[in-house]
Amino acid sequence: MNPYDLKLFDIYRKVPKDLTQPTYTGAFISILCCVFILFLFLSELTGFIATEIVNELYVDDPDKDSGGKIEVSLNISLPNLHCDLVGLDIQDEMGRHEVGHIENSMKIPLNQGDGCRFEGEFSINKVPGNFHVSTHSATAQPQSPDMTHTIHKLAFGEKLQVQKVQGAFNALGGADKMSSNPLASHDYILKIVPTVYEDLSGRQRFSYQYTVANKEYVAYSHTGRIIPAIWFRYDLSPITVKYTERRQPLYRFITTICAIVGGTFTVAGIIDSCIFTASEAWKKIQIGKMS
Image (cartoon, rainbow, N blue to C red):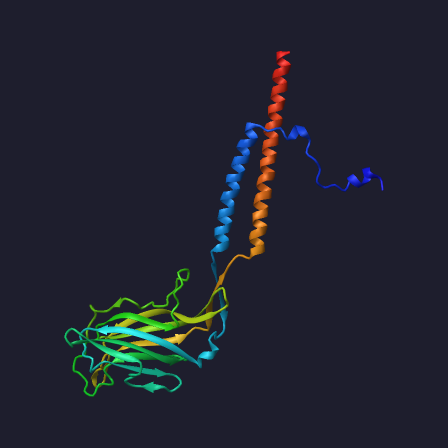
């Protein structure tokens, strides 16, 4: 093979010497390029290290291993109702009717024993139903029970402590009904939405968000006024919200860095070449005028 023909395969062509002449403008552009590349590199690195939360909606029961149960955590204060009168009742459409639920619950006296703080953890079936705080389990019913209250916490499922996930996991937390009618019943209508959080390792945690509407009223029947209670009536949404934690793939990060470096130097080279060419042309014009 002719040595000259072999040279045609050289893809690393040599730059003409007149294009390698150093200039102050070229040095300035080079410094700007390095600073610009460093800035973009740090920006991309920050984006690569950080994670993003992607959410989606679908119709399904995500926590099939729960046995059809939802764990509930309730913390409520009734400052004007004695602990001996406070009880939790649970009902649902599967026939469950439990009065005075006491398992995994505690009552803390308030106001020198005149009030009560109820804290309890219990499970409900995944069917429409209700649980309510009332005096129904008391051995003797009071004449005028005072149902004014403050809800500190009402949450369903596993607790999620993720900063980037802002949801209504404790929508009733902080609800204050101390200024309401003491003899009024309170209805909280809850729509529970299953929620799944999947981290980078693929581990899933199951929780529930909920929306709430409420009303208060004094109920009467043909025998007179009905004993008031604090009702939490719930129903489940068929829509599941899923939050997935993701990170940018490594190959995309490398591709982006290569594009930044190559693109920056290419554009800078074009700008420097234009400035150099214009400068040389101007010098020739000045020389022509002088001659």
